[in-house]
Length: 198
Length: 198
Image (spheres, each protein chain N blue to C red):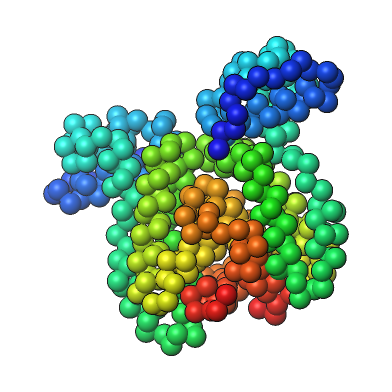
């Protein structure tokens, strides 16, 4: 889960790469050591940059955490992908898309880093709440009109637990299931939260 | 969420009370300060006992954490309560019983303490995994025979997310719902994990 610590890296050809390397190093260290213990100095060392450069690009450690939380998920492309299926398949499509995305190591690491930061720090927890709320609410509002905020909250109640079980608690039965298995097992619950009459 | 910090307490009439007060103080501090930062000395001060007494009753700080995780939930009484309903109501009955239980401040606090400890410490995380697995698996095995381990894992994937959303992320729409509202909204998902054909 902690990635390829200490692997050799080439020189930084430009700004975008440097920013990306800093974010990668910060995610690895936040996930591995927790928000509090991961120092700016250690993150700089891991990214092979001067600590002043992190301050230059991101500001404080809290700002760096905030930048880590903004993964390049485009809710619009998630909505388009799900809307390419008929409404009765939205639940399965949502589970499949999200699990495939979250299974990517940088997302798994980000989830663990966010959880760790949020568990230790109220402001980080509020930031996590905010990030999740807005991305899920945005996605759900792009799918259904009626009661979309409450539907989004219930979708979150299932998907956050799926993420917990698969990436944090590592419940063997959940880890063993493929994204497709999970879409079949969990999709109908999401379908009902999105489109049901509860 | 942090309980009645610093409220006046009477003298300790006996062993059971002393143990209970130490556990209460430990849960409050683990939840509030996190496992690492909460010192045995601070827990002793909060429980108004000598630190040596904590060692006498519980052993190390890790042992104390383990004792905190063993809340007096009797899976057998949960099974009896749920089995007093017809099978088609098991999902709603399970959600209603668990949310009512978890809404009690000592359970909420315990959940936050476990999450905080688990986020910071791999052994605490494994202990949390173990506790959840065994209690939920035990309860589900008392309800259904067929594929009960996998059913329990899926029940966990929903219920852990519900707990996250209600007590940790504090998603307003989830916090605003009564245990009965949640039973109606989430019960059918649990029902399908318990009895469905997925």
